[in-house]
Image (tube, rainbow, N blue to C red):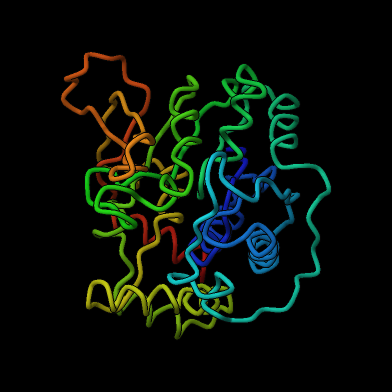
Length: 309
């Protein structure tokens, strides 16, 4: 059984990603750690707890982490995901409650208690992960793999022409993580725009489903769908966080990847948050990440719908 810690800035696509992981019988989520990003930390924690309840399986402990980036003010994405991060559903407070331990401390403790038997999936800014790497680098290197939803991959950015949201929120933290000697698998935003994009037929299938989980997954992404229609002129929504979970737990969904030296630009204002992938090895530096280049959209959707319906 694959055992996971998931770090999230829970908004609508994170919610679907958490449900996907929690409803996979071959996976055990040992903990959910939360970071500010898509929404402020209090909302992100609420949305994580709500997602756990909606999955209707089991309840891993949820821990609140950092409420702002390392070196700058928090940049959030309510304009994409709605004021509540969940498509303006205005959901009630969940019955579940977060644990009192700080997310960074909990993460390090759980890794030490389960040495070399855990993987980490990150779905938000890397602030929690960077602090854990600074505090206990040897502990973090015990992780079998760290799958990161971050970067524009080999495509354009979604916050600036070159920067993807999760990296842009805290590029300094992302730089620390990529330099920490971890076994990193990087899933960029670009792979969620191709065959993994949920089109109008996919959305209608979720909306018409008899499963409340499927209908919830469509409804919480309503603001994202509206944003995408304005941005792309097509009906549907991208799911970078579920795609990242799928890449981590379903190897058959990854069609192509490349190992390369990868670094984050955080000194230049114009290119802040850009992840540079030296795929041609022009810098002649050892690879520090494996980067996903393509995913099997059909395989991804098969796994996704099986979990939600």
